[in-house]
Image 1 (cartoon, helix red, strand yellow):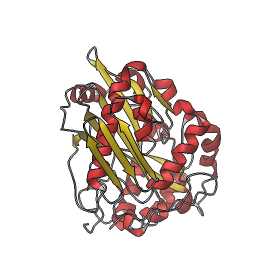
Image 2 (cartoon, helix red, strand yellow):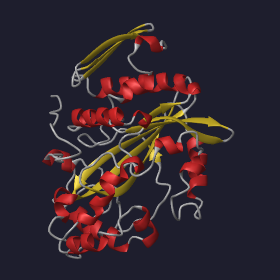
Image 3 (cartoon, one colour):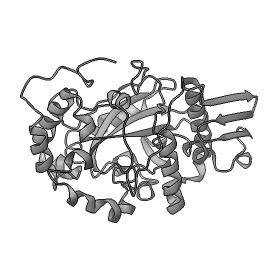
Image 4 (cartoon, rainbow, N blue to C red):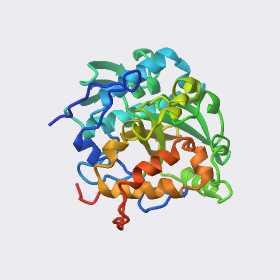
Length: 349
């Protein structure tokens, strides 16, 4: 049975919602009652049926709406998609990866057929049926990276590996948590992570870079990252801070449950076969507090995490202004009982 795609918005009237089934599959990022930045990287392998890890590239009920929002962002600011000249081959690598994974995981929605370099791609949710020559950019309406990432949830950074480092030399970034592709394009791994507090002193990025530069083809890795967002807004870029920044001043004890959203990124890392680059998909999931606390374990644990979060991390994640209001609201849902181990809710899929 195919996915039922929701008609919703991530701006203006904010009609985004999660169905009860989608709440259950939300990738809650805390495996214990406290949080500290860490190298939480593990093999990106298929997970439980019904979870966001059932397929290595996840497509869900928000797919069509997210692609519509991406088109709006790109129409307003084309620089959210950039690729340096030497990254075209990596773009073809990414196109192949995403087409293969979406067709494999969701054959009722996507079909890829190949006859040598002559490929046909059918995307039923978006009404696309294109035949093109693999490797020939003139046969696509956009470059290969832009073409396929206009049809794939999440952001995508393609990293060139050289001089013992990783360089952000291409990307499609329209759902980011307050960072800018236009600013970071061409930077190396340490440069674009420079603003992150505490992690540098702990040597986290040195270890992470060593791991990433040794990723092998066919053995992707993953990690979860998180922050908070006011209103279900996908585009929280520095370029649009004037639109979303003031939202932080609007949180009250009465509207916390509806306005405050946990924003989780499922980040994966894949070695690309022809270019030897690494693609870094950053898949964003949103859930408002009223939805999250339908899972009692998550409500208790999130209260403890946000209450005890180091001040530097709270400031970096932009929580300072409304953190006390959120903690007080969550306190009413924390009876002090122990939480079970692991990320998932108390009952399994």
